[in-house]
Each structure stands twice: as structure tokens, then as C-alpha cells.
Length: 167
Length: 430
Image (cartoon, rainbow over all chains, first blue to last red; front, side, top):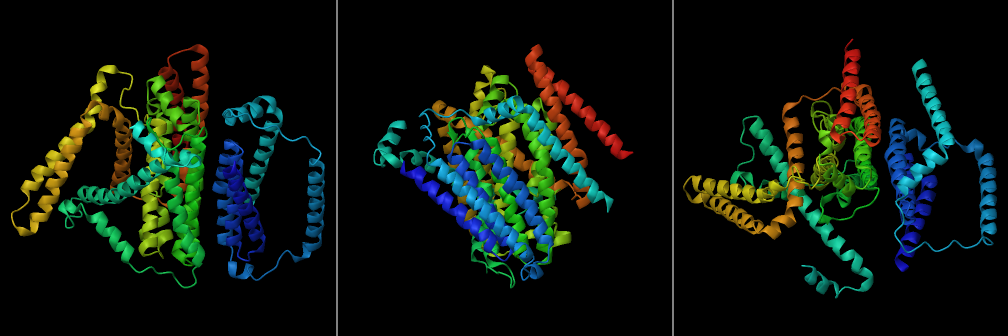
């Protein structure tokens, strides 16, 4: 039992520390790297929860796709100027308010969860592969919402292409 | 064998026992791969030389056989230069990411039904994810060098890898549709069950996977990130010594990894040709035949070397190699041993065919221009890959509902895809 607990704390600590580093680093490339480390440790946490599909998709989409494009854009920016600017200062109050609200929500969730019944122990047998379960859930039980979401993405994509074309 | 293993295991604490066997396997794979990569570089130099009517490395050892060791030593001893203004931490980190991403994928490759490190039920997705991490080695290395050519190389590489990953993903989808599972072992077993390698029912997907694999590993004709006529050496221009050799190691390991994936998905992994035909069982002695041939070649050429003191060592090494190969062949001729190693043997044979093709392409094809590369990726490969996935899915449904022959139904889908590709190519030509 000690080993899973150890890996959990290790991964959780890595995720939190690198998340803090994301917002404290001045160099955007370093921030992006620490964001990648956060996402990676989250993927490994999913893996520890036996959610292999979720872990793999987290790595492929966020780390292999989105963050690569982030870095691509950052590299096209002149960093020596950006590093010494503080462009988001004006929104400081709004951000602080939003953070406070989020903090209150978290506190509420934690407070409520004290009275929730504890989750039953997982059965000792090997868990079913959850890739198929996710597929069945998405494409049978929640087909309509899923398709609506994909349509929304498609519209956004076409819109982006159109806006890029117009120039 | 298992008794000896149990005896060793009894000395290991209970809590560590599940880690013993994987650790041994990982060490074997790691050492084997490092050796393979070293000699892959040698093979590349030799094959390219022969394609260009040269001899290639001939001086270090007989026929230059000790050249990889000399190269490795040279790279280790060279001065390690970090350019001024480089981001030191990322400059240090980038090649390590490349190497790690390339090696970690092998943890999920089934080398044989009796030799694989692990079999995860989302193995295919994991390999995709891990190999997509390798791109960071290139981007960060190019950016951290603080120099123009590496940055351009890194940007090109990002665009190229992101584009071709889409086609690669769709090609892999059709393999997993046929296999009905994401586990790599399951996909090989499905090929055994159907009695046909998936390359022969999904040739289009196989072709797309192969082309995308070449693009993903930055090999010729898609080696634009390191095009020497335009970008000096691309993303690793500023790297030298040991760090450069890490990039080298990563490139060749990644080549081996994509070959291993292609073999597992489309060429039956560890299965021998016609695995369900019993009278071809004698094929398990193929490694013996190959080794005996190698022994014969080594010994004959050992005696053919010119007379004289300076050739004495070369002759000795060649004869020793020949003797070793003959001995190994004799051991493999024992039926039990032949049965045990034949899976690994067929797997490695297929992988080496792929690696030969990689080298062959480098020797024959001219490099693409960058806009041509992008157009090929987005305007041809991706539409064809999507069409192939759709037709493949439809053919699978037909096969399951109508119970026609598997190969016949799949070929209907493939022919429809080919028709689509033809129409697309004609429209592009107009």
C-alpha cells in the first residue's frame, strides 16, 4: 500500500510545484515547460487511477498537440521585449476576485465532502478496459450532446480558417 | 529456466518481486537497442557507400566493423560547446528528452509472444503519446541554441511533425479497427486469427503509415528540419560532442521504434510468414541458415585478406566472428531453442527490412521542398487517410453483417480508397 501512496504524493507535489512555477517564471518558454510537466504528472495520476485511456489522451492531445502549438507561437514572439513587460497588470483586480470566488468554491466542496459517504474499495479483480466503456458512453448514451459538441468545434474551426483567409 | 528464476527470486524481498523480471527485460532491450543503433549507423554508411559505388568505412577493424566503437569514443572525448546566450538548462534538457521519448516507446513493443516488457490495453495510444514527446527535444533544442538556423529547423520540424501526425493517427486507426483492440499484443494475435497480415488487406493505411513514419523521424526525403544545403544542420547545428551523439542516438532509435510499430500493426509482429500453414514449420530454422551463411562469408573473406603482418588482426577478428556465428547457429539448431527464439527473430528480421528501406530511400530520393511537403501532407495524405478509415469501417460492418470473406470485403474498401485517391490526384493536377 505504501508504494501507490508514495507515487501519488510525488506526482501531486510535482504537479503543484510546477503549476506554481508556470505563473512565476518570467520566461514564457520556461512557463510552457513547467505547464507540460504539470500536465504530465496529471496524466500519470490518471494512470494511477486505472484510467489509462484518459491518461493516454491527456498526453497525446495536451502535451503532444496543444503545448507544441503553444511553444510554436511563443518562439515566434520576441522574448527579450516580452520578458520585461507586465502586460496583464490592469486586470489584477478582476483576477483577484475570480481567484477568491474559486477559492470559496473549493472550500465549500471540501467542507461538504466531509459528510459524504466514503467510496467503496475497488474490487480486487483486474478492472475492465475502460476504453470501450468510454466509447459506449459517448456514442450510445450521450450521442446527441457529443455530436453537438463536435459540431460546435467544427464551426469554430471553419470560422478560424475563414478569419485567417480574409487577410 | 523457471526453477533458476524462482531460486533467484527467493533472495529478493517480497515487495520488490514484481519489478525483477521487467528490470531484467528493460536492461536487455536497452543494451540491445544501443548496440543495434551503433551498428545501424555503420550499416547506413556501408549501404549508402555501396549505393554510390564507394567502399565506406574499411579501416577500423575488418570491413570497418569496429568503426561504431571508434565513433562513439570520438564523440565522448570531443569538446562539449555551449554557445554564449544559449538557454543552458533547456540546451542540456532537450537531447535527453529526445532520447527518453525514443527509448520509452519500446517498453510497449511486443518483441515476441514470450518476450515483451509490458502489454497495456491502451498500448497503441501510449506509444503515440510517448513518441509525440520526442518533438520537444527538437523544438527546445532549436530554440535554446539562440541561433538562426536551429530556430528555423525547429519551426519547420514542428509544422512537419504536427501535420504528419494526423495522417499517422488515421492510418493507425484502421489497424486498430481490424484488430478490434488497442493492445499491441492483441493486434498481432488478431492477425494470426485472420490468417493474413493487415498490410495485405489495408495496403493504403500501411503506405500512409510508412510515409508518415519517415516524416516523423525527419528522414530523407522529408529531412527538412536538418536540410544541410539550407540550414547547415537544422536544429542540432550548435550541438557538439556527447550532446550531439544523444540526438544521433535518438534519431536512430526513433527510426527503429516506428519500424517496430509498423511491423507490429501491419506485418504480423513476431509471426512467421504464413503462420497457419503447418508444413512451413521448418522456417523456424531460418536463423540457423542465415548464421551459417554469415559464418561461411566471414571465414572465406578472412582467408582472402592479403598476406602480411598488418592484416593479422583483421583476419583473426573475421575468423573469430565466423566461428562465433557458426557456434550460435549450432545452438539455435536445437529444436527447443529454435522455438524459443523464432518470434524475436522474425520480428527483428522485419524491422531490419524497414530500416534497410529507410537507408535505401536516403540514398535514392531527392529532398522535398517545404511547401511541397506541406501540400502532400494536408492535401493528399490526410484526405486519403480519412477516406481509408471510413471505407475500412464500412467494409468491417459489411463483413460482420454479411459474413463474406474477410480479405475480399477489405479489398472492396481498399479499392474504393484507391479510386478516391486517384480522383483527388487528378483534381490536384488540373
